[in-house]
Image 1: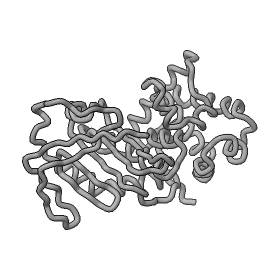
Image 2 (image 1 turned 60 degrees about the vertical axis):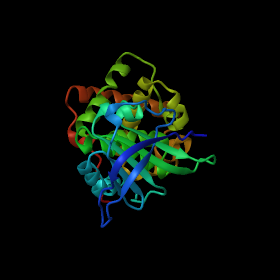
Image 3 (image 1 turned 180 degrees about the vertical axis):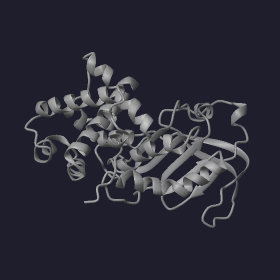
Image 4 (image 1 turned 45 degrees about the vertical axis):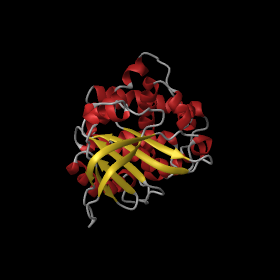
Length: 299
């Protein structure tokens, strides 16, 4: 059972942000969710008298230390969710539960408040595995396009029941072009040095729990390999087949009935060759940006 740790920050007065006609509210305490396994921070002068701006809709609650950042995110986050899903051919749907988004303007504050080195998300479930709450901790020290879409994709796709490998791969490919190039280009090293990698069966059957047990280096590798697999299926087999694979949860059914491979080893031969050409071409700047971008098919 996921342990829910809470951080209570005492505020002198906190004015909630105004959105869609909401009136400002004054509070003296604000309770924020902590990442699982993270303890409350100790006394720190930088954490005293922090003012959080809150914007709330039916499915999103934005808590931001910077009012302008919070207002921007509140006004655009639902549109970002639509973009993140529909560009893959996945129908736009509201989240089934609330998503709480906590925004901080710097990595320094993120570390002090939540002991996180970078943006982070959690899908919290009950004992039966049903999603109960979605939480994003986001550092907005750059442009929103560099941070929000990737984390939001992971949250929205998890809520929709999309397989874990596709959650991770789609998230990478919903990043910016420089982020995508850096990530997929990094596969060139492991492929050329015969490092241990994840192959199709291991990718299709990876669970969130199994992923968390891996080292950060292995998680990063899994994310980039999943992105390459998503790109291969989407670009070489088409949007319809990509959606069919996602709906089938992957595995042998998708392997044979959708992609036409007789075995995992047969798929791996194609997948390895595809990854090798892709990573090499990206490193040599031969791959056009258009190939790395996902656009919704018109038919």
